[in-house]
Image 1 (cartoon, rainbow, N blue to C red):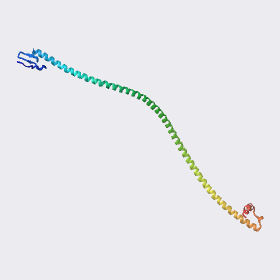
Image 2 (image 1 turned 30 degrees about the vertical axis):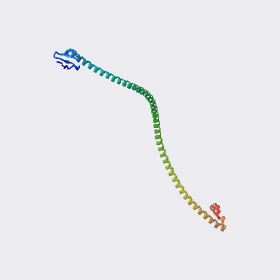
Image 3 (image 1 turned 180 degrees about the vertical axis):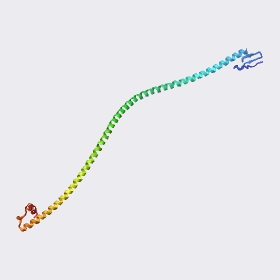
Amino acid sequence: MKAQCLCLMCSVRGAFRDDQEHVFDPIGNAVTLLEVMHYCWAAQRMEKLTRKLRYLRRLVESLQQQNSRIAKGLHVAQAEVESLEIDIATMERESDKYRQAKEAAEAKLRHYQVVLEKAITDLQQQQKENAALEAKLKARAKAEENRVNLLWLEVERATEELEEEKKKADAAVEECKKIAQQLRHQGKFHSIPPLLWQLQPVCLQGS
């Protein structure tokens, strides 16, 4: 009686066995169960190896594709690195220029700071001198103003005195004129006192 092989390792479909543990392959060749098991194991092993080989081939192809992409990426990265190196070298040269310009600017700034500090010190000293001179000039101006005021007072007083003297002189002149007219009418010029003779030209000037 033929029955289907129940070997768990058997991967050969269509093999059967009989009661005497003889197994028949699909073409009718009788083999022992051990031979069938060995054959089935080898076939299964080969199928596993075949699947593994196909997997490894796909993996190799994938890795080759990845390597190709990586090579392209490396080429692009290398070009970027070279460009970055050029940019870095340019930036270093520019940095040297900027550093030199910065040092020159800082030196000029320090020089200007020294000049500015000196100018501020001179200005403060000049302001002190100007304040002292201004106070001195104000005091002198005040003294001159007081002096001018005193002189004006003296001038006013002298003017008043001169006016008084002028009034007295005018009164004396009028008196002399009156005396001279009286003496002339009386014909007594020879009896005029010496003082009147001194005043005679003045007195007679208006007669």
